[in-house]
Length: 100
Image (cartoon, rainbow, N blue to C red; front, top):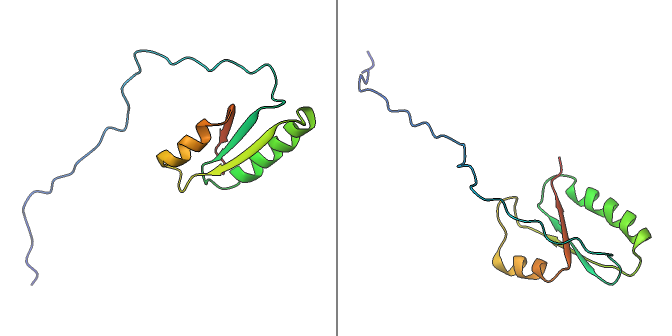
Protein backbone atom coordinates (compact mmCIF):
# COMPACT_ATOMS: atom_id res chain seq x y z
CA UNK A 1 0.00 0.00 0.00
CA UNK A 2 1.32 3.46 -0.94
CA UNK A 3 1.42 6.26 1.57
CA UNK A 4 -0.81 9.20 0.61
CA UNK A 5 0.33 12.74 1.33
CA UNK A 6 -2.75 14.54 2.61
CA UNK A 7 -1.06 17.93 3.07
CA UNK A 8 -2.82 20.72 1.16
CA UNK A 9 -1.12 21.81 -2.06
CA UNK A 10 -0.35 25.44 -2.72
CA UNK A 11 -0.95 26.90 -6.19
CA UNK A 12 0.57 30.28 -7.06
CA UNK A 13 -1.17 32.28 -9.79
CA UNK A 14 0.51 35.32 -11.33
CA UNK A 15 -1.42 38.20 -12.89
CA UNK A 16 0.28 38.91 -16.27
CA UNK A 17 -1.31 42.32 -16.82
CA UNK A 18 0.84 45.42 -16.66
CA UNK A 19 -0.02 48.71 -15.05
CA UNK A 20 -1.46 51.29 -17.41
CA UNK A 21 0.97 54.00 -18.47
CA UNK A 22 0.10 57.40 -17.05
CA UNK A 23 1.92 59.31 -19.79
CA UNK A 24 2.59 58.49 -23.39
CA UNK A 25 5.96 58.92 -25.03
CA UNK A 26 6.41 61.08 -28.06
CA UNK A 27 7.40 59.88 -31.49
CA UNK A 28 10.77 60.85 -32.89
CA UNK A 29 10.60 63.52 -35.58
CA UNK A 30 10.23 62.08 -39.08
CA UNK A 31 13.27 62.43 -41.34
CA UNK A 32 12.71 64.50 -44.49
CA UNK A 33 14.62 61.89 -46.51
CA UNK A 34 16.64 58.74 -45.92
CA UNK A 35 19.29 59.73 -48.49
CA UNK A 36 22.61 60.27 -46.76
CA UNK A 37 21.28 58.76 -43.55
CA UNK A 38 22.14 55.57 -41.69
CA UNK A 39 19.24 53.14 -41.23
CA UNK A 40 19.64 50.29 -38.76
CA UNK A 41 17.84 46.96 -38.97
CA UNK A 42 17.28 45.34 -35.58
CA UNK A 43 16.61 41.60 -35.89
CA UNK A 44 15.00 40.20 -32.76
CA UNK A 45 15.81 36.57 -33.77
CA UNK A 46 12.22 35.55 -34.51
CA UNK A 47 11.69 33.28 -37.52
CA UNK A 48 11.70 35.07 -40.88
CA UNK A 49 12.32 38.56 -39.48
CA UNK A 50 15.59 38.65 -41.43
CA UNK A 51 13.66 37.96 -44.62
CA UNK A 52 11.15 40.71 -43.88
CA UNK A 53 13.82 43.30 -43.07
CA UNK A 54 15.80 42.33 -46.18
CA UNK A 55 12.76 42.83 -48.41
CA UNK A 56 12.07 46.25 -46.89
CA UNK A 57 15.71 47.23 -47.44
CA UNK A 58 15.49 46.31 -51.13
CA UNK A 59 12.44 48.56 -51.49
CA UNK A 60 14.04 51.45 -49.63
CA UNK A 61 17.30 51.23 -51.59
CA UNK A 62 15.36 51.84 -54.81
CA UNK A 63 13.93 55.12 -53.49
CA UNK A 64 16.91 56.20 -51.38
CA UNK A 65 20.13 55.02 -53.10
CA UNK A 66 22.43 57.14 -50.90
CA UNK A 67 21.27 55.47 -47.68
CA UNK A 68 23.66 53.35 -45.61
CA UNK A 69 22.09 50.30 -44.01
CA UNK A 70 23.44 48.51 -40.93
CA UNK A 71 22.16 45.16 -39.68
CA UNK A 72 22.05 44.23 -35.99
CA UNK A 73 20.86 40.96 -34.47
CA UNK A 74 19.92 40.47 -30.84
CA UNK A 75 21.05 37.31 -29.05
CA UNK A 76 17.45 36.50 -28.15
CA UNK A 77 13.99 38.03 -28.33
CA UNK A 78 14.28 39.35 -24.79
CA UNK A 79 16.35 42.46 -24.21
CA UNK A 80 19.56 43.58 -25.84
CA UNK A 81 22.99 44.17 -24.32
CA UNK A 82 23.96 47.82 -23.75
CA UNK A 83 26.80 47.60 -26.29
CA UNK A 84 24.33 46.60 -29.02
CA UNK A 85 21.92 49.36 -28.04
CA UNK A 86 24.80 51.87 -28.22
CA UNK A 87 25.55 50.76 -31.79
CA UNK A 88 21.89 50.95 -32.79
CA UNK A 89 21.64 54.44 -31.27
CA UNK A 90 24.26 55.68 -33.76
CA UNK A 91 21.76 55.25 -36.61
CA UNK A 92 19.54 58.04 -37.86
CA UNK A 93 16.57 55.66 -38.03
CA UNK A 94 15.99 52.10 -36.84
CA UNK A 95 13.53 49.51 -38.10
CA UNK A 96 12.67 46.47 -36.07
CA UNK A 97 10.09 43.79 -36.66
CA UNK A 98 8.93 40.46 -35.42
CA UNK A 99 8.56 37.44 -37.63
CA UNK A 100 6.88 34.03 -37.49
